[in-house]
Length: 389
Image (cartoon, rainbow, N blue to C red; front, top):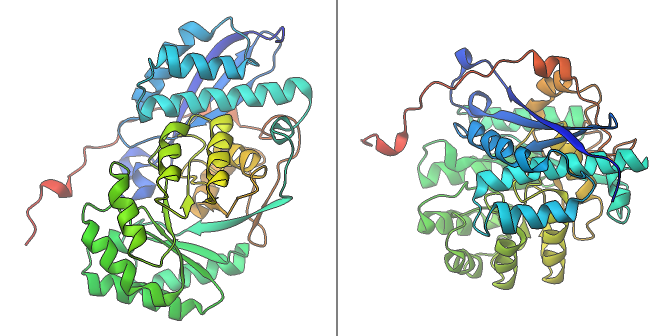
């Protein structure tokens, strides 16, 4: 217990591009949601919630509702908050938006606790087992790219940041099965044998197609095959795992240790990719990694958030994991990250260094955050309801 008390909880929604420039590629829909907890002693903490397009304000509403209970409480009582959030406020039936809200608040609490004690968060977790963390670059389905453009982008990122692993989205280009397989083959041929290639299926609704592509690309030395289907049927996921030699990955759409416990017990995957800003925060992330370790499953943290608060929180949790694989990064978030923060961590020689300083070790530019006005995204045109010819 401490003499710190929460006096206010603020939120900031940060668009990656202005609403007027939205194209509905990832750069046009992604908005970051930051949480700032202020205390009576002037120590503040920063957190970040994962956001889903058009649902950012629903997560803000969850935070506002919890704020009524949390103002006046001790921000260092993190275990109590986690128990209260899941069992009482969430009534043991919270959804993903509420778990994202939990995550942002919990991360900010850890930032405060570390600052109040003068130690980095990873020391509160028992200390790091890794001095630096391998990173991979998400190339993203940010507009349709030709196979040659994908190879050029990867080579440029390898030269600039030292990346040796890249994630592709062949299912995002409205291509035939043969075209998708040819795209992956071209990427492998263009990069050569020394780079790791990750394929994100992004939760297709066609399990047969996901399996067929997986079998066809086994010869290209793919290091992981991510989310061949959605997270709702673990038996189908396990069935796909039994029928392909590709290492399967799932977890970014899941939240809470209980869900991950089922994934690990059923031996559905070879890797999990939980997101610290989705699953419930830093402590939940570490609990999930421990469950995975006990089941001989590796962890490759998902991180489709900003390259500031969430990335730092991910690094603090990930550096304590013996079963860590590599950390996801989004190179195109770097530009806005430099505006949001004075000291965002950047990939160097293919690795992420551990943050310096107490707490998360991130120094945010709150004046920039205050200057941003929220603008709703224009309505989407849903492919699901368009007739295919």
